[in-house]
Length: 108
Figure 1 (cartoon, helix red, strand yellow):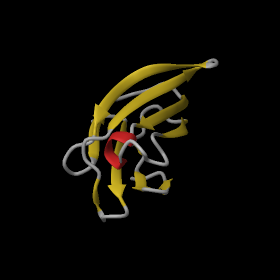
Figure 2 (cartoon, one colour):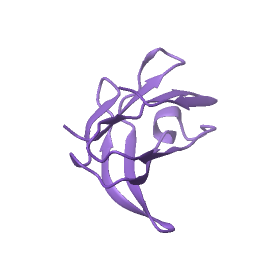
Figure 3 (cartoon, helix red, strand yellow):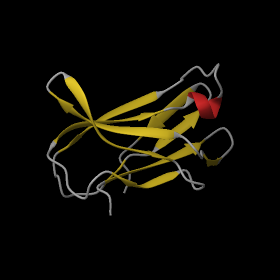
Figure 4 (cartoon, rainbow, N blue to C red):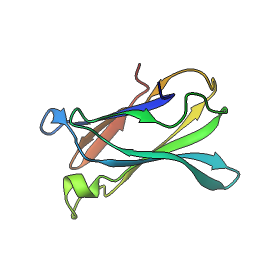
């Protein structure tokens, strides 16, 4: 199982957000280095995003929301940065998305 997974829910429709491209990166000094990328499935999930273990550090997920919300989207992309302390623990980072707002939390 991938150490990091995500799920995007369209809160305006109450349905999963399918087809959203997501980039997973690690902070390396002042730069960001790619770890993996994926696209949400029909359930709005990416179940396999990156390796089974990671070094502790700061990571981020960037969601390309413009293609889903439309080219005039207020949030053309959403970037969520988070810290991994335990490189063997599963981290689920969901995104709740609507045309003019988003939120997140550490899932299970």
